[in-house]
Amino acid sequence: MKAVRVHEYHSDPKIDDIPEPTLTGPLDVIIKIGGAGVCRTDLHIIEGQWAPIQNPDLPYVIGHENAGWVHAIGEGVTNVAVGDTVILHPQPSCGLCSACRAGRDMQCVNAFFPGLSNNDGGMAEYLRTTARACVKLKPETNPADVAALADAGLTAYHAVRKSVPHLYPGTTAVVQGAGGLGHIGIQTLAALTATRIVVVDRNPEALALAKEIGADETVLADGTHIDAVKDLTNGEGANVVFDFVAEGGAENDAWAMTAGAGYQFVIGYGGELTIPTLDFVAGEKNVIGNIVGTYSDLEELMVLAQAGKVTLHTKQYPLDAALDALHDLDAGRVRGRAILVP
Image 1 (cartoon, rainbow, N blue to C red):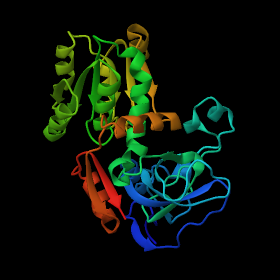
Image 2 (image 1 turned 45 degrees about the vertical axis):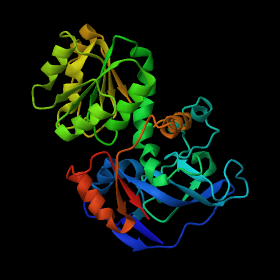
Image 3 (image 1 turned 90 degrees about the horizontal axis):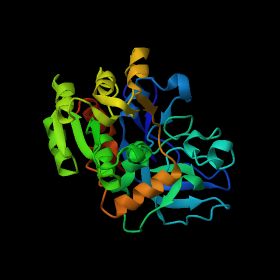
Image 4 (image 1 turned 180 degrees about the vertical axis):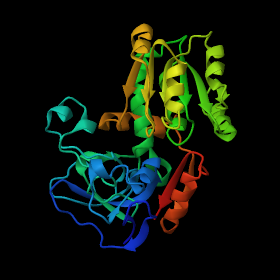
């Protein structure tokens, strides 16, 4: 089968012909990929940022946002059958550790992460995962239409879901970055809360899309955006700021846009948040980290998606054009999410 593999860091991946994955355990599931999302994390992987954490053996297949059809199942699998349409939780978990039993399966001590850890991902024709990762979809669902919800959507939903108690009517939420994750965050905020949604982005096209999908106000990130948000909130700042950028100084802008006793949800990464401790004490502000959501979060998100309340704005590429997709993402030429279709 064809697969996109990283051979060395700081170099483009290669499209190789490799053997198809096979079943190795009773709970294994082989998926025929129908869509694989291209994520900024894939760029960070290629840059070697994840090597100290995951340390995969090279070469390996990247791709952690995957949906498709069940191709083969192990003898112990009962929740899906061959032919089912599924989206995959990106981090299969064990179900037995304390974190899993507490419903925090994204912090499973025995988890693995195809496409990041030492396990081949889904930028290929087939992927091996486990039964616990599979969320069954309506048969008519096109996997390419929902694949990026497996990580980008799930991560955005997880952050918004945690924020709901703070976003009662009369509050303001700022979404910083209306790209691949942010445009999903806007829609989930609109679906789950009655807050006023203010979107900050440096790209006018992204702001135009934000208006179409639920933003009440948009602010161009041109150096005056912090003051603009303050003007929209009577000088106080937002009750919750979702930072889907968190690099290049945006992380500190998000802090400045957060009201006293408010919440800064950090979803993007790559920068460094620098805050005087007195600001924490005097302002009683809160900084909340966010990783990919739980299996239950993904189930809930797919209910919204299949009801048409959350839709992905995508640009599709054939698997052979994976490098084009990665380069377009790196250059900022992708609005929404890039999807590889084998």
